[in-house]
Amino acid sequence: MPKSDASEAGRGPAHPATARVTADVGTVLARVRRRLIPFLFLLYIVAYLDRINVGFAALQMNRALGFSATTYGFGAGIFFLSYVLFEIPSNVILARVGARLWIARIMISWGIVSSAMMFVRGPAAFYTLRFLLGAAEAGFFPGMIYYLTQWFPARERARTVAAFMTATLTAGVIGGPMSGALLSLQGVGGLAGWQWLFLVEGVPAIVLGGIVLRVLDDAPEEAAWLSDDERETLVDALRVDARRQRMETTGGALRNRRTWLLAVIHLIIPVTLYGIGFWMPQMLKTASGSSDFVVGALSAIPYAAGAVAMVVAGRHSDRTGERRWHIAASAMACGGALAISVLSSGAAWTVVTLSMAMMGLASMFGPFWALVTSELGGVGAAASIALVNAVGNTGGFVGPYLLGAINDRTHSFAAGLLAIAAMLAVGAVTVVVAVRD
Image 1 (spheres, rainbow, N blue to C red):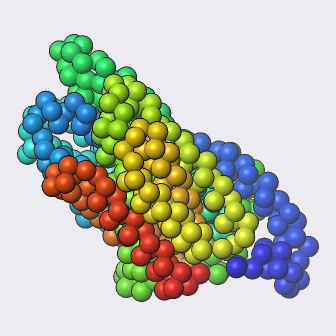
Image 2 (cartoon, rainbow, N blue to C red):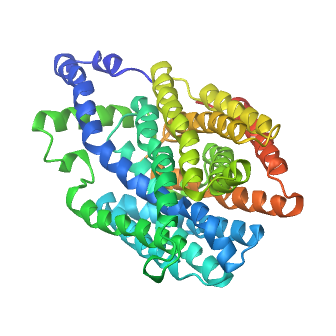
């Protein structure tokens, strides 16, 4: 575990001043958390909705355009190929020009592309726009993680990242019913329901991109909403934290063995998240035989369960200072739930086991990103975060495509879910055996 600020404060003649600063750190961080997290949370909700709404659109779009499960799975997953390709350069640019300008650019461009998905008429256009959407959004999530490291010391990051990333699951909670309602607009204004879904859900990203330019501060030194004492307190706490990290160049970070190991382990998270996320509506449709709106409502349940688990796990990881076993235990819980999900095809069983799986998966997020950001600092940290996310997000292609291809061959999701469960077990063992804190 890292040394506490109190132990750092006890060194040298500056003890009284440092003790005063240390006493105020918790209050200042609470204020920063209240200021930043709700807004970043909203941005990530919009990002995740634009990423996964294709799963709900598929309930109508696949039939209307004649897409097979393999075609849909490839199109859903190709997003991540371009996302991975542009991830590292995008995050390095963000670290150099500032989050405010670069996040705004990312959001406006992806909002435009997401809305343009309403014009898809065949596989070629589907693949092209999904590829462009990945390129437009590249750097958003790792940029957010890097941005949080500029405001929160390492000991606070698991719960901070968990609070921010509950947006992923909140998007699932609100996105299901919202997408179901938009699909019900079938024929209104001469548009299909799936076209309304893409059109409406792309607009908030464009609007929020403009707001980012006005409200986001790049660093604590620029935060006019903090008093001079609060700014000094926060900056001093971050400097103490930075002394425990190794400053690294972009090249050095990209050659770091620990970074690559974490990147490979991260692969299992997007495989699971998007493998489940992109196919959950169709799994629930098959299991329940319900309307699109009811399917959307049912899909909210696993995401809501995961959101609660994510916050609890993040807080516990920060309180104990332990990361690896939190990740491993959560991965095993998720894999076990997916394995037993294939024992029955009933609607209630499907909802319950997918909820258990999402709870295990979500519990990995906070501890994992706290572990990733604990060693390197500077621009090298931005490159390291981007590399982990880029390599890992190839799983966003693998998961949907794997389940689609297996479903085409077997007419069942069972084998695909068991394959993902096996990957989670391997990841759990690897993080315990091969990664150091």
